[in-house]
Length: 572
Image 1 (tube, rainbow, N blue to C red):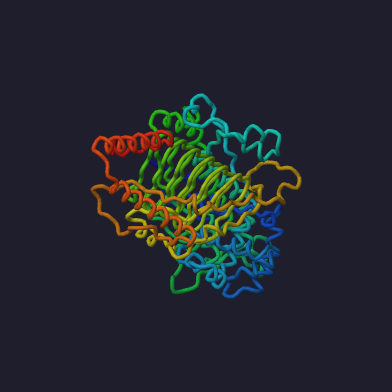
Image 2: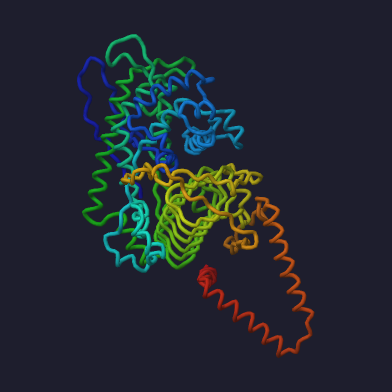
């Protein structure tokens, strides 16, 4: 249940320029847009500026000189930032996946060539580059390790030798990592914006004749771009556009250009709203900690109820602490939502729905099937996990011994401290898959599963100190699953009693080598079946053979842990 926040902004000072009074309704509460901070940070050292305002002001001027209709392409970005063409295109593709405006040409672009041709709005690019200085809130360990011992796996075989290696690997050897609570993350992001909003507004403003605070003004069009970082009200409610949620442009005539507003006035307004929101979040967090923390409550519940799923109006649906079981969620549970799967162990999780964003964090020894994620997928701090995903883009960070079966429209991004990653073509389907892919804009004819791009081995956004020179190292690239090791993953019929979709096969065409192996395996299976049917056996020998097959199959079910899926199917 979403807690109502109360605007506690102080009354305006009686100055000559009357500051507008806060809007007194539920939509007056400001929130950070979490998406840019969660899916929009790139570990490219040249994009992390120690003094963003001093660095970005001349970069903005240089880009503006080459802009067409205030938009710039990857070549101009590469030249201005002194980065490679691949990294410049990565900047545009990443920015397109986290933009707030769904009808922006960059969001609608489907191919790399289209991304280059439409370019990016310079104001969105400047905001995107600015937040590359953001430092994430560190994950924390659980206070009671014994409480999660049967949920979380024992230490990995890697941990025996990581202790002799670098600090980044020492951090990775700590298996019990837990995401900060949504309230903690929101407070951290708002605090960052509180510190930097003056600089951000300055970069979006234009100079005019005047003195002091009146020398910079902000147009309504530029003001709307701040919506890349913040929004008012809860998602799902009747949230107005950013300019309509504040008094500066709320009553503007749509047929007339709005009069620009002094940047200082916008700055004061936003700072008051951010301070008010931080105060409300602080009250919420302190109230919970006096009883039990979000994470402690979550893990305590996960030991009792293995299928812990929680959500609120603003944030993603969170699936946490699932252990030694199977979990199924369909479109009616998750339609149009974002989802986080966290700290799950030795389980099979099916999220067969059209999604916006998906995050898989801190999981081990599990298989996770993501239906169709139209924006982005991020997989982080996972061990021995198989991820099957149809998505527009995916980022893999700090994972070990994981295999990714991908139908992905953009190059997979591999960052951080990874070991023994493998990638393979998409290998499954369910009856509504193509319908869900169409709904979220995934192209089945484009699959860049084997074109992964490995960048920095050190994440400059993780708030940790790293050895000198570590930031120059590249992440370990992924290898391809050999065609003779590739298998099709069959999804159980979870849709019994519901309308069946039209998908009958994998919508992503397999590469020839994988398709040939699949056809050979099917042919061998059919020949074996035919041979068994035609072999003359007495009835007692047939029964012995059938019993032997059943015994071996049962042994395999127990050895692989798949026996639990049968129990889950029977339970449903």
